[in-house]
Length: 424
Ligand SMILES: *Cc1c(COP(=O)(O)O)cnc(C)c1O
Image 1 (cartoon, helix red, strand yellow):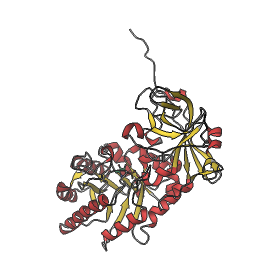
Image 2 (image 1 turned 180 degrees about the vertical axis):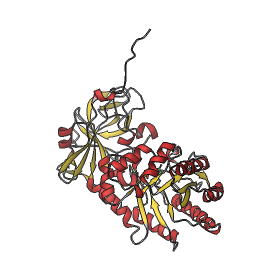
Image 3 (image 1 turned 135 degrees about the vertical axis):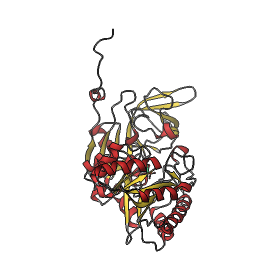
Image 4 (image 1 turned 90 degrees about the vertical axis):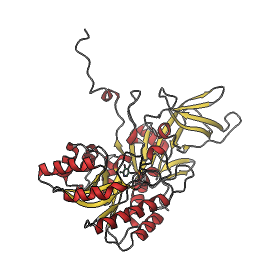
């Protein structure tokens, strides 16, 4: 079992832990993201439990949910972090994260970002090209430092997931080609301000089968052995993130079987294992709470227009992703208000602005809906499109609610803009 379900129906009301979502909507308004501290804690603990007794580091992928409270919770539970920008590094440090447990991924690291990470003393740079290696060597040399690196190697396996979140194929912009890896490692080993520490891969996201992970690990191990015969001894293997969650009817590998499979593959090699899970730790620990503004029957479809939109949760519009949508206070169907199929859409002026198609619900205007499994790539991909303030974020711990991000104020949305002095 990977996740405790902490969003359950009690007294005909969906609760987050012990708090009814109706109470959260009344107190903090909608749309808002609601997270369960217990679900977050258990996910991280359950993920780590698989590696007891061996050297390992779990680096939460910050981009999946960068809220300071979530980073701080994970930091207090001992996690490290996988970052993809200088901004994410600043967040991790502001949240009390330990720089020495940070891995830095990403294909476009700037010299400034490299400097900040070297200054902070991160665990490892996951280098994604030969040019990046040259730049990192220069930047580190200028600072009189040595940069710890892994090469992100592209094992050329098919993660069998949505093409936008598949990253381990040859055609991807990520990592270095498997065939080139040995050569680039040999170059790295010659660079005075580079210390080769590891090998890294990350093959994609929302992966629901074990086999792509196993195939990738096999290829990485073959490379580690080849490096050893060339005198390069690897201290850690970073297997990336990508374990999927259940949004609808997927059956992703649970953490225990994933861990057992990885341990078995590793055998008795004395290397540390690093992981970069994002979605698997936070996805099912959050919901997006929204209210039905209008019900709009048309000749072909019934629309339920809600006050959350693609700017709040982009996954349906971007990937045609499925999120379960539940009535917070389910109604019984009646003759005048039967169960019907709704298009759940937002107010944004785009036909792609939908949150769910063909959802069978019994609804009235004013009803609250919970968009489930919205804890990952929800708030983090949100925008201000249509000058919509970003939603508030609330953390629930048993019967307590904490505002972990205030709803944005409209005046803040254009505070950085300026009007031209003249127009002639
Ligand atoms: C996005 C990302 C992750 C996290 O992926 P999940 O599918 O959320 O686990 C890990 N590592 C890297 C390099 C990433 O880009």
